[in-house]
Image (tube, rainbow, N blue to C red; front, side, top):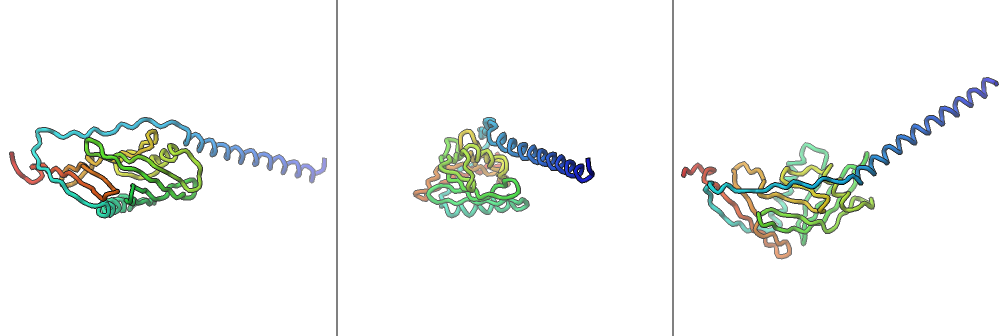
Length: 209
C-alpha cells in the first residue's frame, strides 16, 4: 500500500473518531438537559411562623399602595442582585409580574411570569402562577419554575414551588433589623388596597416589662 493511501485511511479513521467523540458529547449534553427538566422536584418544607405569646408588643395597621410596594420591592432586589450577574424585577399591576432573564447554556433567555397573590391566614402571601414563558422555549410550566428555583436568586424567605406552580412569600419570616414583625392583611391589586400589620416588640424600643 502506498504512503498516500495510508495517510488517507489514517485521516478517515481520525475523522470518524472525532465525529463519534463530538456526537457523544452532544448526546451527554442533551441527555443532561432532558434529565434536569424531567427530574422530579422534592416538596418544599415551608416555614411555620409562630409568635411567642410571652412577647409584649404593639400593633399598627399601615395602608399603602402597590406603587409604594413596587418601588420598595425593586429597591430590595437591586441590593440583593448587586453582586451577581442576574437581573429581574417585579411589576405590580392587576397582578404580580416578574420580568428578567435566566441563563441557558452560554446565553440568557427572557423570563416572564404572571402571578395572582393570595393572602394566607398567617399573614404570608402565595403567588399563584397564571402564565409563564422562557423565551421561545416550549417547556412545561413546572419545568420552567424548576429552572427558576435552581438559577434565580431570591431572598431566603421566598420559596419557589414548581410542583404547585406557585411562589410562597413568607413575609412573616423577613429579617428586619429593627426586629419588627410584618404580616399582610389585604393585598388587593385591583382596588390598590394593601394593608400591612406591623408588630413592634417592646423590647425593640427598650421598654421593660
